[in-house]
Length: 254
Image 1 (cartoon, rainbow, N blue to C red):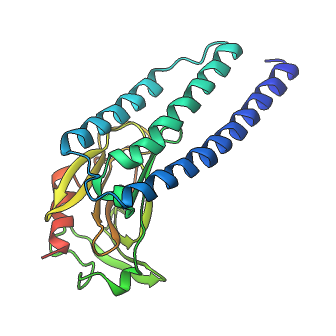
Image 2 (cartoon, rainbow, N blue to C red):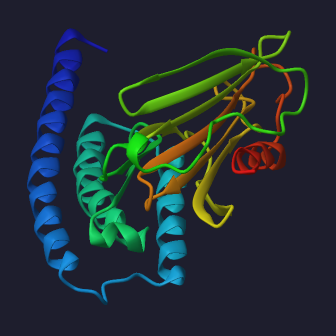
Image 3 (cartoon, one colour):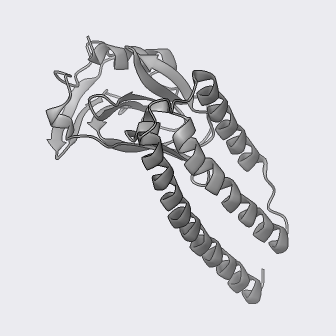
C-alpha cells in the first residue's frame, strides 16, 4: 500500500467515525423522545416472540459481519455507509424491542456490532438502597476456587475467586456493564425467575477461548449481576462450562 493509499484510508476511517458520532447523537434524541411517549402508554409492551426474533436478527448481523470481505477501497466505503444505516436502525430500535421493560424507561440494552459487545444499563435508585441480595457469595462453586478479593465502590460490588491454575471466577453487581461477545450469539435464559443472558465462548479459538458469562437483570431492584469464568490460558480447557456457570449464578440467590 502506497503512502497516498494509507492517507486515503485514514481519511475514510475518520469520516466514518464522525458519521457514526452524528448518527448516535441524532438517533439518540429520537429514541429519548419515543421513550418519553412510551412511558405514558401502559399498553406499550413487546411480546416474547418479538423479543426472540430481535435477538435472532442481531445474531444474523454478527454472522454477516464475520463473513464480510473488505475488497477494494471503494467497496470499503460503501460497506461503512451501509453499516451506519444498519447501526442506526439496529442499535436504537433493538434497545426498545429486546426488553418490554425498557419501553417504560428502566432497562437499556445496546448491541455493538462493530466491537462485538453488549452493554446493559438500568436507570434506578442506587443499588445499595434496593437490592435484597444478602451477599454475592455463591453456595456452589465447582473445583478448588478460593476467595481472593471482595469490595465495593459507589454502586458497584464484587467478589473474585481463583484456583491453583490461575483460572478466575468473577462476580459483580452494578447498575450497568459491558460484556464482550465476539464470535458467539447472545442466549436468552431465566435465572431464578429473572431475565438473564449467557455468553458462551468456551468453544472459540483465540483470546476469548474458555470464557463463559451469565448476566442477570433485576430491573425492580436496579442491578445487573454478572458471573464470569475466565481461564488462565486461551489454549487450556474451559474450567467452567455453560451449565455450571448458570448453577453458580442461581446459587447466589439461595
